[in-house]
Image (cartoon, rainbow, N blue to C red; front, top):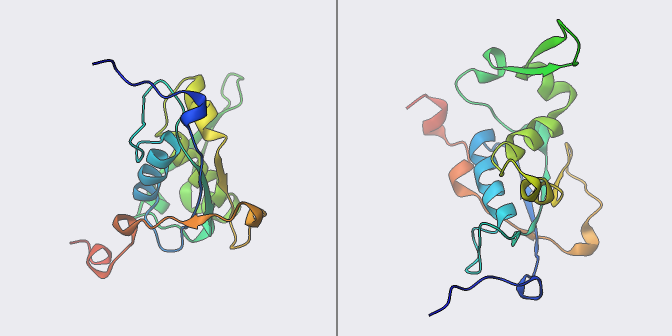
Length: 155
């Protein structure tokens, strides 16, 4: 029996939409990264991009748990000596919430040209409106990422 390898003609790409209102950032990122890779499909192969397009709306309403918004820092470097800048996630969520969600998802994709190709199928918007209505995206339900009453109390 020969190993199956998907051909470009075998790949069909669907469009999914995720409402990030009240979802935990890390749990949202793992589920969306799996859909971008195509791990939910039976034709998945690690060396081929078999994933679907994902639209994330309401990125400004995503939740960080256990005080990470105030304590976790995002670093960036200008490339010059002493050019390291640290910014709190609470500040980033106010200024660039779509970038916070995009970076969390990109960090869970492969670190090669295939991962960069997968990241182009991700569209993140801070508000509820998006310009991809013509693609008729179907809602992607992520029940494991929903913040419930038990997670708020720390249990």
